[in-house]
Amino acid sequence: MIYQSFKMAVKAIAGNKMRSFLTILGVVIGVVAIVVLVSIGQGANSSVVESIEGMGTNLITANINARRMNPIDLDSLNELAQNEAISYVAPIASVSGTVKAGTTTYDDGVVQGTTPGYESIRNWTVAEGRFLQQPDIDNRSFVAVIGSEAATEMYGTTHAVGETFSLNGYTITVVGVLEAVGSSASGSNDNQILIPFTLAQRLSNQTSISSFYVSAASSAQVEQAQVEQAQAAVESYLEKAFENYNTRSFGTQYSVFNQTEMLSTLNETTNTLTLMLGGIAAISLLVGGIGIMNIMLVSVSERTREIGIRKAIGAARGNILTQFLIESLVVSLMGGLLGLAISVAAVKALAPVLQMTLTIPVNVAWMAIAFSVFIGVVFGMYPANKASKLRPIEALHYEG
Figure (cartoon, rainbow, N blue to C red):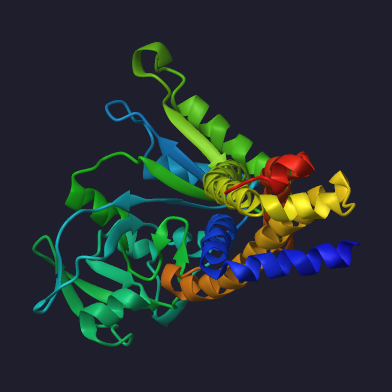
C-alpha cells in the first residue's frame, strides 16, 4: 500500500518537472540557509573560544575607568606583583602615531607600551633577539620588540634585529622579533610593536595606567580557585588604591575579570547570535513549506477527476490522504537531502574565505532534515485532507 503510494508520488512529481523543481528549490534554500548560518555561528564561537584560551586560562585583566584621578602607577603595580597569588603583572598602554621603516609606512601595526612580564603573561616566545628588559623601562630606551608580520611588512624579512624605524619622529631600534602566534580575540598578535612602558607614557603624554594584565601564580594546569585568589588580590589592591575616591562623584573606578568570565559571556553572546541566525534561516524554510502547500493544492485541483475515479472503484479516504501526504513528504525530503549536500560544499568553500574552521554538527544536519520533513507534513496535510474529502460524484463531474 505505502510502496504503491510512493511510486505514484514519484510519478506525479516527475510528471511536472519544472514545477516540482521550483518547489524543491524553496526547501533547498531553507535547509542551506539553516545549516550554513548555524555552522558559521558555531565556527565563530569556536574561534573566539580557542583564541581566548590561547591567551592563558590564568589571565586576569584590569581596566581603570578613572581618567582624572588615577593613583595606579608602576611602583604600586610592582608591589602588587609581590603577592604570592600572582606570578606576573604588566601594564599596557596604546600609542597612536605613524610607523615608518625607511620609505615604508606600516599602518597595520599596533604600538603598545609594556614591561618584561608581558612576555610570560601572553605566553609569547622571542624568535630572534630579546624581549624588553627592566633597564629598558628604567631608562625609557628607544627599543622595540616586533611581531613576525610587522617585521615582514616593514623590512621584508623576520630577521630584523638591529633595524630601525621612526615613530612620531623618534628613531627606535628593533631588539627582538616574536615567533608567529596568529590571531586572538583582540586581533592579530603578529602585528604587535612593543616598546618600554615608560617610553609609551612619554610619547602619549600619559602619567597613569589605564589597563594592566595579571597572571595567577600556578602551574600550566591552573585551578579556578587559584585564579579567583589572584583576582581577589587585584580587586583588594584596587579597592585600597581608590578608597579615598567618592564613587558617586567619579562612578565605577575599575573593572576586573578573568578569562573564564570572558568565555562565559562570549559563549552566551555567540550562542544567542547562532539561535537568531538559525531562526532567520528557518523563516526561509517556512516559505518553502508554503510553496509545497501551493503546489499540492494545484495538484489536487488538476487531479480531481483522478481522485473521483479512484474513489468510485473503492479507494478509501485514507488511501487518498496517504497518497498526497507522501507526495508532499517526498518533495520536502528531496529538498532536505539536496540542501544538506549543497550545505556541505558551501561550508567547505566558505571556510578558507572566512578564515575559520567550519563543520556541520551532526545534530544540526539531522535537525535540518527533520524540520524539512516536518514542514512537508504540516503544509501537505491541508491539501491531502482536501483531496481525501472530495465526493466521487462531484469529482467525476469536475471540469477543471
